[in-house]
Amino acid sequence: MQNQISTATANRTATISTTIAKPLQLVGAFILGAVILYAAGFVNTSAVHNAAHDMRHSQGFPCH
Amino acid sequence: MIFRQVVFYALLVGTLSGLVLTVAQVWQVVPIIHSAEVFEQQAAAVPAIESAGQLEAAHSHSADDDEWAPNKGFERTAFTLLSNVLTAIGFAVVVMVAMMASISLSHKENPGFKWQHGLVWGVAGYTIFWLAPAIGLPPEIPLAAAADLEARQIWWLFAVVSTAAGLAGLAYGKSPWRWAAPLLLIVPHLVGAPHAPGAMFAEQPPAAAAQLEQLAQQFIGATAIANLFFWLALGLAAAWSVRRIVASTRSEFKSGNTATPDYKLPSN
Image (cartoon, each protein chain N blue to C red):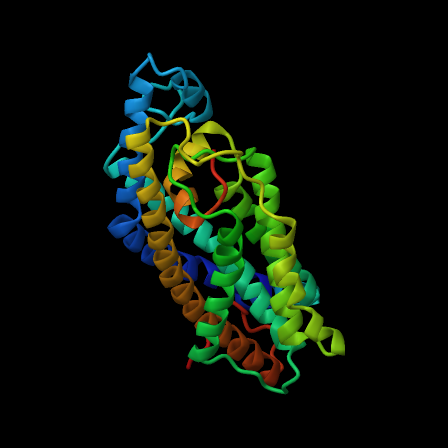
C-alpha cells in the first residue's frame, strides 16, 4: 500500500517535471546564473564589495 | 529535469574551478594587490597630501574605515575563495546552459562532448568574460584612477554580450550573415571603454607612481594567466558534466520510464 502511494507520487512528480519545456528550464537556469554573477561581481554595497574585493580585481570586474 | 541537473553539476564545476582559480590567485595575483595596498595605506596615513581625503572617499575599503571588511590573512583569503567559488558557479551555470542550447543549434545529429570541446568552450569563456573586457578595461590594482564605476560596469557588460554574440554567430550562424558576426567582436572597442582623464597614478608621488605602474603591468600578466587556468578547468569540467546530463536524459527517453527519478546519475 505504502509502496503504491510512493510510486504514484513519483509518477506524478515525474510527469509534472517533464511538462516544463526544456528551453524554459534552460532560460530559468541562465537567469539564476546571471543573478549569482551580478551579486558576486556587480553589487556595490560596501560589505559585499569588501568581501569580494580581491576576486573582483583579479577577474577584471570593474571595481571601486 | 534539465534545470536541476544543470544547477547540480554547475555547483560541482564551480567549486572545482573556483578552487583552481584561488590557488592561481593566492600564488601570484593577491601578492600584487597587497603590495599596492601598502602604497594606499601610506597615502592615507599622510594627511599633508591633499588627495588623501579624496582617496578615503574613493576607496571605501581603506584600513581605518568603519565599514566591515574581512581581516587580513586567513579571513580575507577565505572570503576570496568564497567569492571565487560563487562567481565560478555563476559562470558554470551560464556556460552549461549555452552548451545545452548549442546541442539543439548544432548542425550535427550527435555533436557529443569530448574533452577537446571543453577546451574550446573554456577558451571561448576566457575570451568573452576576461579577454574582451580586459582589452578595454585592463584589471586594475587598488589606487589606479578609473572612470565612473557604473559607466565601466555597463561597458563591461556590453563587451561581454557583444563578444558572446559575435562568437555564437560565427559558430552557429547559418546564413551568409554569419561572416559578419565577428564584427560584433570589434564594436565595443570602437565605442571605447570609459577611462579617467590623465595618468593612472597621477595623484601619487612620482616615485610611488613609477612603482605602481610596474605593479599594474605585472598584475595584468598575472590575472591573464590565473584566469586562463580557471577557464580551461571550467570548460573541461562543464563539458564532462554536459556529457553526463545528455547521457542520462537519453537513457531515460529510451526506457520510456518517466517514473525514473531524473536526478539519478547514469550508470556509466
